[in-house]
Length: 150
View 1: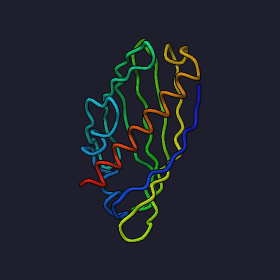
View 2: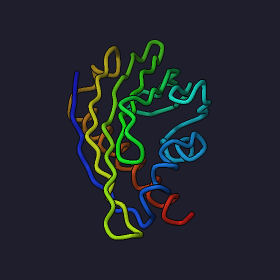
View 3: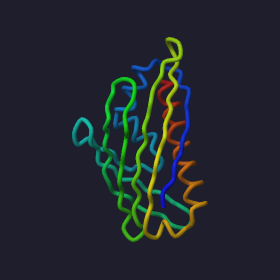
View 4: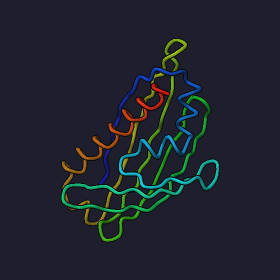
C-alpha cells in the first residue's frame, strides 16, 4: 500500500543552520517519533531502530536511512527502509527543499512517499494514512522546535 504526504514548515533559523540540522544524526534521532537509535555509518548512510504503534500493532523496525540527491544547502532526498518482523515492513522517503525567507527564516517543504506491507498493511488504508500523516507532522514540528530554539 502506497501513500503520499506533503507539507511545509516555516522555521525561524537561517537556511545554513536548518541544513546542518537535517544532516545531524543527533537532531534527527530526537525528532523521529519512536526512534531508539540512529547511528551514522557514512556521510549519507545511517542505521536506525524505531518502535511504532500503529493501531493495535506495536512494531520494532530495524533499518537503514540514506541521504541522496544532495544539493547543499537547498535540498536532499531522505529514504529509509525498515523491517518489523511479523508486523511487516515500511519503506519510504521524502524530498526536502529549503528556501530562505529573509535572513532569519527558512521555509522547509517536503513531499513524502511511503509503502507498507505485511500485517501493518492489513490495518486498512485510512488508519495507515492518518498515522503516517501524524508521524510526519510530529517529525517536522519537533524538528522546527529544536532548530528554532537552538
